[in-house]
Length: 139
Image (cartoon, rainbow, N blue to C red; front, side):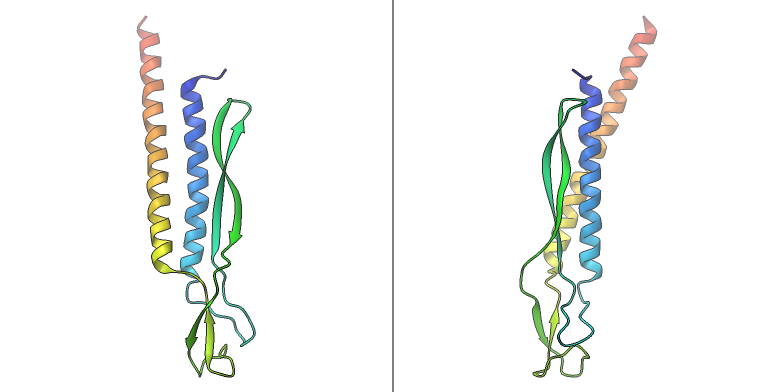
């Protein structure tokens, strides 16, 4: 069995990597929240989603988190009346992305908090490792 402090570092590092991916996807969704297709029959940007999986790391015998899938949200596109827009259909409606700004900001906040929590775990574990080394040196 591996050292518990090393396991905690491995678990926290996997959390950092997963939340970093989540933040990247949220940023991409926010950046494309107003993008439309270039023609009336073209679809606009489709919101991306991230799902996680609990995976056993055989080397450390620890349960870590990994990105399972980056998928697309199947929520219907929003329609907005913009008759002069190049992507407007014959009735004057433009398809807008299925990105909800409030949802994306909530996801960003949650991912940021999870990222910070994992950073704190790494910081505390490093402190414990340092204290252990200092105790061994003093003997």
